[in-house]
Length: 246
Image (tube, rainbow, N blue to C red; front, top):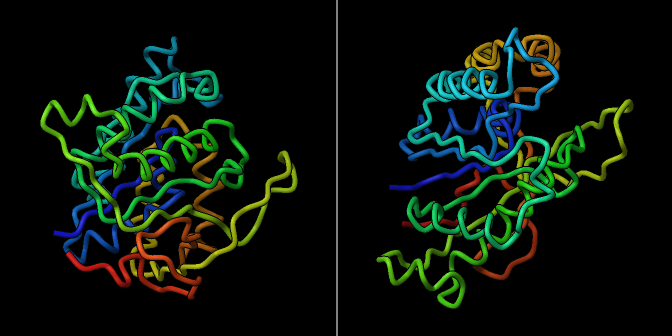
């Protein structure tokens, strides 16, 4: 069975980054997974939560509800600090993700761009860097060999994509998004994607604005092919699994 893994920073990123693609490929029988690095406890919008711990618990539940709407096979929220991913030990976090990649064995990995996606959020940028190295190092027998002694095996995912967008936000710090190399038609899943945004009740003010943006731009999701097993030149794609065989 084909497998797709998305790696994000916060609950709600899964919708904005690649919610339509999760629905599309799930409908085609692909096993879909999402790993969210933080429970989002530092969010500005708090939905009445009285503490970071309470907000984290609420947002974990929202993420689970969103992933059910997106028909995700396996969804995980890890315990890294929201707003603090750039302060963590890089090799340790990549090792954690490498272990999870070796367990899930995805064919395709999706994450955010190193610029931090359209918001330029530092957590988004770090999620990209962690995911990128986990993509590469999960395939190497000389990286985290203690995992191999525990029974895991190196896993070489076929492709790594960064999500991107056809616009930038003028009121944010400047970002330089990766050029789109893959255009995925998710129009049949647009309403379900918008429904998934509504599962993030604590983030309602942001999600309302996001839903308006989706109605304008959400018929397609754009990705940048960042790495692939087979050396090649860039060709425009309309399928993230193009050229991949089980």
